[in-house]
Amino acid sequence: MSEWLVDAVETDLDAFHLGPVDLSLRSGQAVAVLGSSGAGKTTFLRTLAGFLPVRGGRLLRDGVDISDWLPEERSLGYVPQGLGLFPHRTVFGNVRYPMELRGRLDANARTDDLLARFHLTALQHRHPARLSGGEQQRVALARALAAEPEMIVWDEPWQALDVGARHELGLVLKDLRETERIPVVVVTHDPGLAFSLADTFLVLDHGRMRFSGGPTDLLEHPSDAFVARFVGYENVYDRASLEAGRERPFPAWLLSVAGPGGVALGNPEVVPTTGVPSTWEGTVRSARPNPEGLAIELAVDDLMVTARLPRPWPATLPAVGDRLRFNVGPTAVRRLEDGAGGVR
Amino acid sequence: MNAGPPAVRRGRRWKTGPFWVALEVALSGSLLLLFLLPIFALFTYAPVSRIVAAAANVEVREAIWVTLYASGIAVLASALLAVPLGYLLARKRFFGRAVVESVVGLPVVVPHLMVGLGLFLLILPGSPLYSFTNAIGFPVYDTIWGVVLVMAVVSAPYTVLASQLSFEAVDGRVLESARSLGAGPGTTFLTVTLPVALRGIVAGLLLTWARAVSEIGGILILAYAIYPGGPYNGPVTSTISVYIYNLFQQGDLSDAAAVSSLFLLIAFALFLAVRLAERTGWVPWRRGDLAP
Image (tube, rainbow over all chains, first blue to last red; front, side):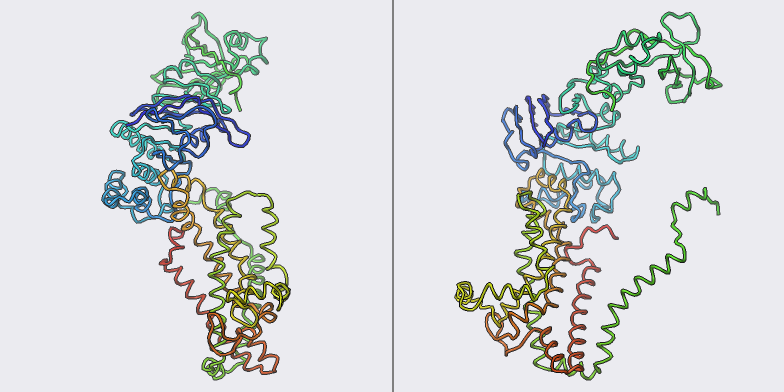
């Protein structure tokens, strides 16, 4: 299997500029590309796939510069948003297509194998329009694999899938990565998929690369408000809203620890007694049970804080209007360095 | 029955008031009557025996044959020339595209006598183009080629328009998938773009064919009579439209009605055959439809 190197790649699409983007990818690795709408995620994938020209930098596969290669020469399983299934072909015809192009004599047998592997045999005579979302995803993946790609590039595999189908497709993608050792690049808005599948994260914002690295780095140093929210920080404050309340103690303290992009708080905990150092007090707005315990929304000096009360759940939930104290540990404060990627 | 909140139910199931139903029926009904009453008049005016006699008449059969033959060639020409233009307009952005689109619409807008007159003046006897068309074996005056020319000019716009819309409707991401799976641009066009757009193109070709068959204005000027030559080697004849026009001019109303009725039956049978072929799903352009 091959090694890919995205070396300071840049491209332009109308007025939009992407890059430079750096990324290296070995067999068995998976990259999740994150970013808000319009960040350039799809543009990046389309550049990898050869539909947009590499204007700067290089794209290397096993040391060979393939920047100028045509899409059909890149051996890349590109699955666009909406999957791009052929509406005029059956499931069988879709999966068989890449092998027809290569004139393979065992096309039918291999198609049968792939259909069986993705549990599509019973559906093989249907057209894509008559499949469920999850079934269409499996067809897209089977068809991409039929081309024996050197890398799978998938734009939003999770789109419009229910929880069960997501789980199933997650298993398939993981299996693909572990058994076939095919590198995978996915664009996703789903943190669950990103963390379960990817070992490398690429964060784009307004066409620029904000972050590239592993999951712990991403969790420790979210670059901006978008990333902080994406990876699961519930309490994210931009500078403007903190400045507005700077006269009051809690915003003033947050402002003192905030970066240019604001600040994110990791997991504030509700503490039972008063007198614990570095605690704050707020008024309960809501209390929602979840698998870990209670998520309690508190109003503190006009800011909302979601704090956690670990299990076991109390016999009676805190009532709206109750006063509770919570603690923000010094290691839970994340300075956000990038202001540009703020709240949209 | 356990009813949900009434507001939701009302939102889901539209209940149309009797006034609107009546209006809908009245409007669509009058249009259908406008279509059907003239046909009814034709069939009632001509006794069945006359229609049968018309079907047996060699002159009538020749006129019908030459009309179908010429319109068939016009449809082939449209497929060959108009589909690529539709593709160009759908996929390429170029300077003067709006002008080209308007030019395509022109033959549909102007009275077809004007199209015939224009063609006549262009290929005026004695002009270089006249000698040229004669020299390469496509004489247009009073030949089947003249009929084909007029038919193609006035009817090809329907194919251009239909194929443009069909090509535009092909999802670019489907095409990108094909490329990424290893198909070059040409293969992608032949295996994906064209098959996916085919249904709309065929609909356009059907319209083109219908428009070609019904043409008379331009033909009156360019090929009032059709002498043997080119692909037609029968006796001197005319298109069915001109043939019926002549019967009417001679005051032969019952024969005009009988021939019209006969041709209506043939046209209706042909259209019905295509629709049934689509319904059964064996034609390639209906594969993968949403409808079960």
